[in-house]
Image (tube, rainbow, N blue to C red; front, top):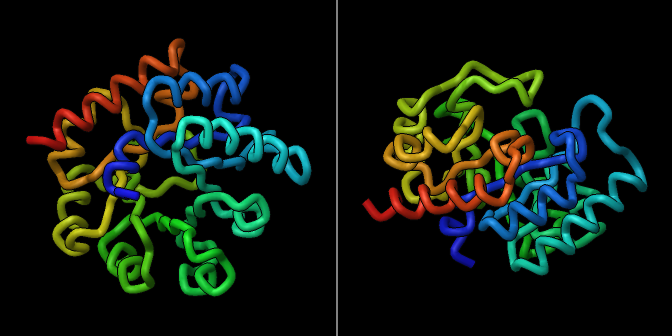
Length: 216
């Protein structure tokens, strides 16, 4: 797998990130051209237990149909149980080193980083890619850190070399060109797609914009 290419149009969603059927939203987004999907079931009214697992498995099936990597946010146990393609963890979650000890060898492990120190540590720990941000202010995460802007992305890119990077936090289509120019391999969005009237069209636009500016 070309991970950098897979990160281009990275969609994150849980059942509580849309006022529509999340499976329908994901299907439309996959049709539109998202290249990576992260199941993130957190926050108010989030599903738990069997309901969470059932939704994860249904979303995983959709991703398999479109040959798009499916990873789970934070819940390493669930990711291993359903044989996901990987897991994404934050700074307060389990370490990459610990996850590697118990996960299958094919697992993709992504780590969130909000500053240069965290990004460098993620590389040392052997993260497969780094989720850098928030680039802009976001209302999706209640505990979101201060935005680092594209200048923060430029600094992190300089320090981590060729490690794949995806930008996160308050990103809309209009932001894509400057984010890719700053060194990201792709952009990750939640509400830009999950709350869109036409999720497939927004996914298509994001994919096209990243591809277009990645070549420059």
